[in-house]
Every structure is written in structure tokens, then in C-alpha cells.
Length: 169
Image (cartoon, rainbow, N blue to C red; front, side, top):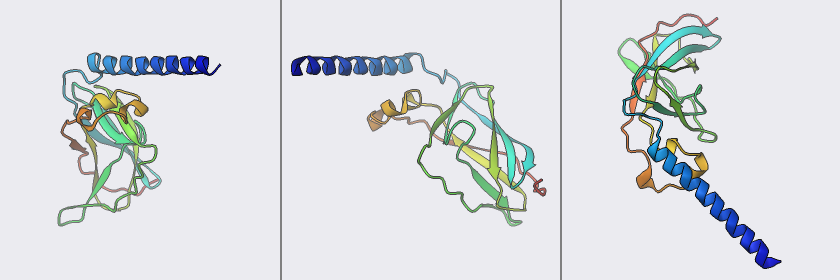
């Protein structure tokens, strides 16, 4: 009885390891980023309550990867024009729980709500990079990868043009 349970457990481990290996090989050879470079464009759409709604569009030729709470909720930074230059707005608290990489393929867009802590001209920025191997794998597999396999792509920040403040509606 114990021998058959042990044999069954070994076969389950072998099946799980095979599936993980297939996922890694597929991610390595198929990939999702293509050969091009990502480039994000951020444009203002409208105000809603204390939020501005902006569109983040990948205008590049490769998939963009950014960090956040999903594709429509990236971590962002707001800069305020205080008259003597641009200053960083008071930061929103970004907790890491539930956060992860989101991929935005070329010519795709996401609508995002940006909290506005100001009544002055402002702009919003989102950090992005080319996706790495860990972005193409399930999170539970990516967490097990050695750090040498993690993405070494440089990170860029895309900024919206300056946007005049208008009373949120």
C-alpha cells in the first residue's frame, strides 16, 4: 500500500516537472516579445471624480512589460508643475500583494484611472521594459528561476504630455 502511494507520488512529480519544462522551453523558443522594441504612449481621455482616465498604448514593434495589479492597473508616477519645475506628487502606496508583470502587445491599449492629488498641471509616467523569460511563465514557476535568468532589460519610463488640470466631474 505504501509502495503504491509512493510510486503514484513519484509519477505526479514527474508529470509536474515535465509540464514545467514544457512551459520553459515554449517560453524560450516561442516568446511573446518578438524582435522589436516596445514604446508606450500615454494620452489623456477625460476626468472622472478625483481621477483622470488615460490611455496607455504600445506604439512600438515589441511587447511591453510593466508592473502593477494587472494590465489595466499599472504602477504609475504623477509629476506636478509647481511653476518652478516638475516635482513628484505625493506617492500612492503601492503594496506588492497581488502585483505582477503585465504584457501589452504592439498596437494594443489599456484604459487606466490615475488618482490626482493636485489642482495644477500634471503628467503621468509608467515604467516599462521588454519582457523577459519570467514574464512569460506562470508566477509560481517564475519565482523558482535563478536570478541570472531574470530579465536584464533596461527599464524606461513613458510620460504623458503635460495636462492642464480641470475640475474633475
